[in-house]
Length: 185
Image (cartoon, rainbow, N blue to C red; front, side, top):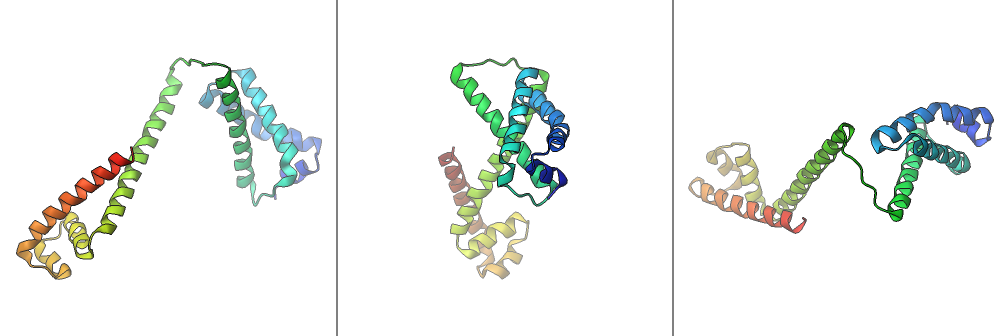
């Protein structure tokens, strides 16, 4: 356990100051840059976070400083969420799109693309598992550009028929993946 955590558990005033010095500016930068809060809102949330940590620190143990950092940021994120829930319940706020939001928007777009790729992989894996073993081997080996002669040795099927089997299996796979993706949208 870190020295800071030990001191915080004893409610040492120097530890409280050290907590503020270690995390105050970092949390402030995060709140202002990433969440577009004004100075007063940001400091209000930071103080709520620090007081909450001091209040509940006795309930937790931390393996290392990295775990404690995660805890601090999680408490801060929870306070941010609560703040926005309260603000949303009071009325709708409009935010003007500025340059700093472009980075956040691009990050959201990347996350959606990753989610889409992940969904494709989940559907593909699920459908491939439904195929007979020899068809799965045929599809995967052909995708790696093996010749039909090489594939025939593994699947125990006539070389002359493999192209037809491959085209049919590929069509079934494509149709089922598209169906799976459409059902998950």
